[in-house]
Amino acid sequence: MIIRKKEHWFRMLFVWHGSVLPALLPRLGLLLAFSLLVTYFHGNIFSFKVPLNPAPLTLFGFVLALFLGFRNNASYDRFWEGRKLWGNLLNTSRTLTRQAMTLGTKNDDVSLHNFVQLISAFAFALKHQLRGTDGYEDLKSRLNDGHLKIVVASKYKPAVIIRLLAEWVQNLKNEAVLDSVQQARFDENFDKLSDILGGCERIISTPIPYSYRVLLHRTVYIYCFLLPFGLVDSLGWFMPLIVVFIAYTFVAFEAIADEIEEPFGTDANDLALNTMCHMIDETIHEITGKSIAVPQKTSQNIID
Image (cartoon, rainbow, N blue to C red):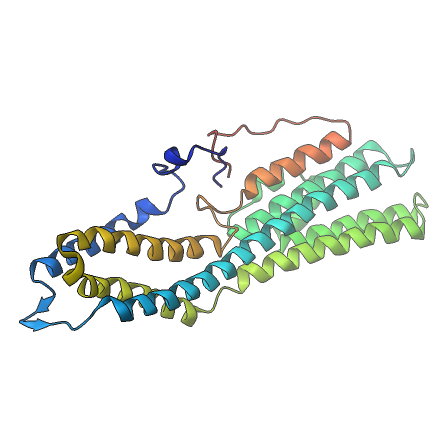
């Protein structure tokens, strides 16, 4: 994820990293070459003059901009919902740790440590499930041998970790360390973890309908390749630059929407799940009075 301080407006014009422009350069270059050919032949194709003028293209561009706006809103809603879910995970993790820390002296340090490590493991397991990566190393350093064996053998690891957390609370209830009211409080937060897990799974398993994406993608490029014929008579050799600028706006909006609609990936503008996992790990251990080493950022402007 790209994190930058507010920059001067002029410097923002030349920002490269984190922009979609590098990925669009080949397409924009192709459109520039096509526009130059249209200008050279004065909008003729095999002696046939394409009868286009700016009026219909202006109307069509307005409608296309509306559709792109809806598309970007839908993608950003998915991105923001994912961010809110992980914010709720941070809050719930802190609450569970605080609840466990205030149970009383009957709760031994080893048992409490296992509980806190399970909370941390839940965040890392969720991250790896959403990204489809192997989380063994992250889980190995946070779970005891018994829990590790159970979690690694499961397909839906975060759900299994919630079960282990609930079993920890039930064991304390059986030992009369906590009462039914306290257990209910824990269960409320376990339900929140389940809601967070389900919300993330809903985002990752329900993409924007493919037919909608294809229609918008085709429409954007058809419009961009029709633009030269509608503007060549009025703009002449200045037309290719105007066409490339207009195309950059439309194509970039589509590219940004494609990138942020899956917020749990590893693209430059996706959510920084790895950093958020380490933040959860650090803050819950700090609540217990312990400090842990947290990986440092490799770049001032990028967190992963």
